[in-house]
Amino acid sequence: MHRLIPLLLLAAPAGAAAAGFANGVKIGEVTPDSAVLWVRLTAHDEAGNRVKQWTPEAPNWTVPGLAGEVRFRITANDAEESRTTEWTAVDGDSDFCHQTTVDGLEPATLYQVVAEARTGGETGDETATFDASFRTAPAADSETPLTFVVSTCQEFDTSDDFENGHKIYRSMLELDPAFFVQTGDTLYYDRKKPLAKEMATARYRWNRMYAFPNFVAFHRRIPSYWMHDDHDLLKDDAWPGQTYGDLTWEQGLKIWDEQIPQSDKPYRSFRWGEHVEIWLPEGREFRSPNTMPDGPDKTIFGEEQWRWLEESMRGSDATYKLFLSATPVVGPDRDRKKDNHANAAFEHEGQRLRAFLNSVPGCFVINGDRHWQYQSVDEETGLNEFGCGPASDAHAGGWKQDDVRPEHRFLRVKGGFLSVRIEPTRAVVTHHDVEGRPVHEAILTP
Image (cartoon, rainbow, N blue to C red):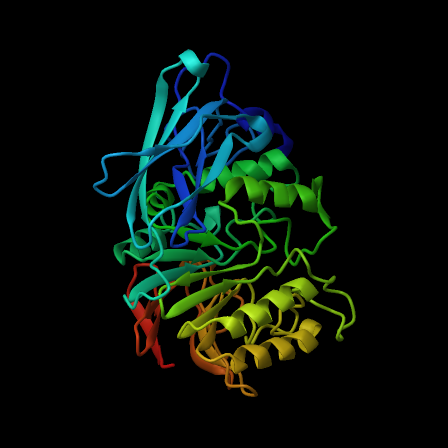
């Protein structure tokens, strides 16, 4: 019955006069001199049918798109002149989304952004606007301390504030972080109805999630980096070539590319001043099948990404080199899981990865995917890993609170997020609960 939904959500009803940006503006892939700006033109300025119960006849949080044109105005703080991008048409082929890279920016500078829309062509008036702002990354020689935040595993139906969206977004915003990393499982195609077994329902799940007011308020101010994992591409433990109902792997990638600000490569690194560089590897697009026998040829990263990883991490002079992973590297993980570097299915590459990361001065791991918070230290190499935990308490589980293993330095089977404070002489890694209260702190020195 979920196939009824696309007919309701592809576009605004005929004759609709309103226009809006119900999904707000996303600011991604920020560097000292560039950013990627994203917007989706919608029929209204907020979601409709904002009720908890979903039914095929009356889907909740409906956010129909609207055909028209969009552009951005970008102004440096206190500057008199603005830069304006070209009007760009949006339609159902791209789910009414548009993104553009803005370069030539100045480091550590606050920029004001206004998204504008029109539906009447060159003779049409502007029919909607939405303001946002972001600060570019500092130059590589800047010693300014900074704080960033990390999250994972957010599901629409396990939101702890159904009117506004997950509480962590309000809690993270109160910290005024320099940036945010979403480490994957941004949403779930394969949990709860409507199951996203074709493109229109998958898009619907993106549209309603990012119409939550807490999400809109957070992303209009905080530059972000998104990593994808299995549930936000296709289904649990997915690898290339698989399908989920009628949804193909290629369609899953297309939708991801529509909904999230993109870089040229799915694996990339970003420098934030003298003391921190983050690496965002890609763990789905190049992997071997999970069912393949383990050995030197079985891989999650692939040869090209391994070369990039080794060369770029060894070549960096940042004090702290942070490896952010969509899945565990140290763990421990459950024995039945077979799709990450912490378990036996990829043991050969996992050992190689832990040894390499531990050989990089100032390196530690932050990971998503697991539905509990933890700090673990690999017994063989001494590599530190911090699991940020799921986005709500209702999403926590999969591990028992009293199952403390030798690797654990901290274990909490609850939701929340992670913050990292980078200073010249130390990195302070803090687990927070969903309200933002610290529940664990670790201090690492170079």
